Image (tube, rainbow, N blue to C red; front, side, top):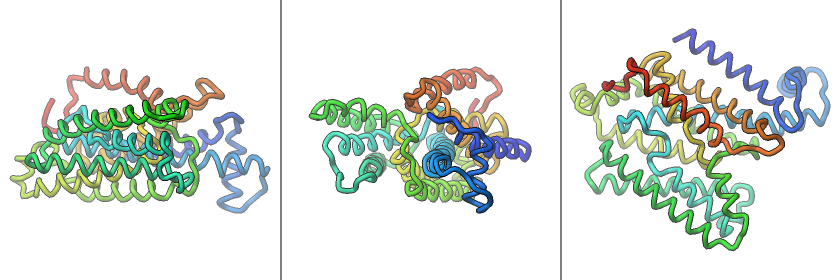
Length: 339
């Protein structure tokens, strides 16, 4: 495990520096390092234009990619444990579809326009949290947060939220609304600013800390509710706490980056293949792998059809689908207590 973590950490650090050099104006790594040294250490001088590109535009984008990638990956691992389903991803709880309703309302009807640049993120976050509350309420009224009820409730309400968002686009008088909504739904890190970073950073660090502290309970829950209960674990309270934690985390990530697919679905499986299913071991690996993966996806999205930028879910889908199919074909792979 230690070797895997060291390799991933080194790869993340190198990738972070390299990613800043990609864009409409390619920058060599030496220039990026000079700017970072000047900003952080105060040593040397640097060109003001390069300083603006690196520090104000690309570095916040790279950090956001690292944070969102890590957050979606650990959220995916948590959701798969919560519902004991290897096909689960962070958007299973209806959070992404709820966020799409909030974002679409902002884009098509100008809701929350008084918030300026924050209006889209706030609208998406409000929609995401509202969707999570509805999923939670419906599941609890039907008997509790069992894996089956969560999957069915999240799937059904996701379809309902998507229909509402589609209707709002249909009724919009703005001709470019559909294109704008579609681009947001497929995810993007463009427009990242330093002001946007604190909330997802706090959310990801807090969620990671909570999941790591309860890793033993998560291991038992992944094997089965009966096993966890036999060990004295309060299964119902654990499920509720895990649902709330992951819903808030995913809602914040979707609000700042849109819906980015496959990160939370594929990366937890790869981490389990590398270091095994124990959460105390796999969660750090899945966080680093998610951060590394999404930054390289963002690089590909920027350079594949330059100067146009591709939505991130287009790239993650092209990469994630075949990788997941390969994982499904491995006979030795286990999820929880199931083969």
